[in-house]
Image (cartoon, rainbow, N blue to C red; front, side):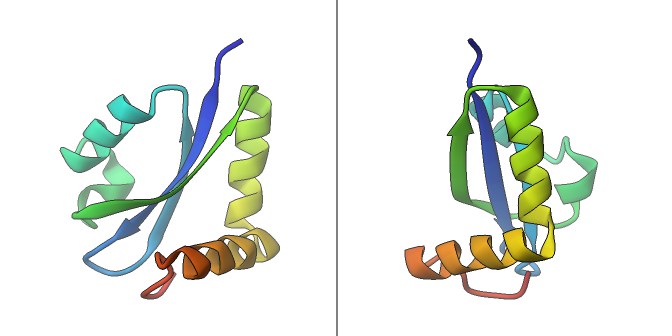
Length: 90
């Protein structure tokens, strides 16, 4: 079974978060950092601040949507603050 990663990037330019999921984190990060992802191209440089692995794509999509919701965003922000990655606006 394929493993999926939900990941969070923080823009070092404006402090905002980008939440996504992928089955190949290394390649996805290369695309983000090289400007190949439209939604983050103008917000570089980016820092990977959170990852979470799941076994099914459906779970990854569900978890990504949760993090983008109000309660999920607050949960994520509290985790980032505890880890020292919560600086800036979201």
